[in-house]
Image (tube, rainbow, N blue to C red; front, side, top):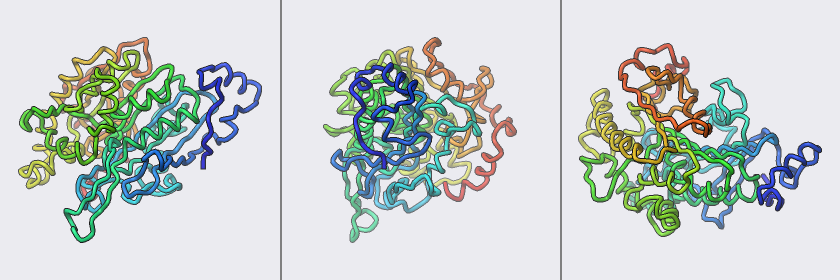
Amino acid sequence: MLKLIRRPALLAQGAPWALAMALAWGAPTLAQAAVEYYKWTPVTLPVASGASCGNGTPARVFVNRTPKTSKTLVYFEGGGACWNQKGCQGKGKLTEVASNPNGVPENYFSQINLAAFGLSTPLITRTPLLGKIYTQDWNLVYVPYCTGDVHTGASVQIYKDNDPSQPLTYHHRGYKNAKALGDWMAANLPRPEHLLVSGSSAGGVGATANYGVLRLATNPVKSAMAADSGPLFPAPQGGTAEQYPSLPLQNKVRSLWGVDRPDGVATELISRFPQAGDVSDLSTLNTGLSKVFPQDRFGFMTFQEDGIFSAFSYTGFYPEIAALSGSAKDAALNNLWRRDLNNWVSQLRTASSNTGFYLPTWRPFLKSHTMAIMDFTGTGIEEQGIKSVADFYNNLIDDTRPVMRAIEYDQVGDHKRVLSVNPIQWLVALFEGFFL
């Protein structure tokens, strides 16, 4: 277990020369002496902080440090969400249930699970086998997903809709976990020269929702956010489902997950920084974060034909879609998805110039869901000369260039470039219907 100690005062005050001199002399600092480098180390978040997995077991993160830099990636794991008893118990297909219903053990990375031995994305590996990206040389903080609330919750709910005789007490504590993580990072890691907060799917929502609390806790010299395939779509409380297809979902989970409670993820940030957004429409964080942190850089990405996030967003709330199957269901889901996408892009275009977006059309892997999972192949926008989403990630931390805003208008080219992706993607695509 990683020992919890506070960094020396000079480092806490942002004196990088102290760390540099210690490394040059071969003398470890106080914080360095307590850690192992290039090894995934579990950190159990304090119970007193309110941190918890959904089943009430301890919440954990995993840290892989390097002595060569203070640059740090925080990566939120993706997975499924829940708002009923069966879903929170993990009973059903992966696209219908909460992830890690039994919690996160200390040996999480040695098991077959969402982390996939820490190799689920090139962003958190130390080797470029699945694609080269700068974070492979950074300090890495991996945040498992075990709360069923896309890392945004601050509540405890009792679900008994499936079996009233055996009610389920479920801890939606994703936001509490993120706050505890921020406190831990402030106490145990040097001030980041550069911070990148990222995540895929539910982790993409988590990156957006929790960026502020991590940014404020760590006080990095430079900072950026990359939210992959977890869009917070506009869903104002005064709107309709016809205008905003994600509104029924957001209305369902707002109170269950506690996102707009006084101690909720949206309320706390917006209470401190009113320009961050409007609690009645959580998507306002998409543009509000750039106002609160005008020197930072923000990037949002998703496929235009994402078949998994759309299924989570609409299937349980539109009976006419739930009754469909096969290609008819896919088409109906994408119809609502593109309506939400149009609202989202229109919103993002009003954001400050430090906010960008990246929307390719399709790739076969996971029904076009996520761009940073597995590898970066099949994520290019060829009509604009962009080879892959790695270019978008590179752009986000390069403050000499404007933040990229790119949409693929060719709707058929990706479907024809079948040889441009990793063959493993096609292998997974052949069998994914059995578990998605």
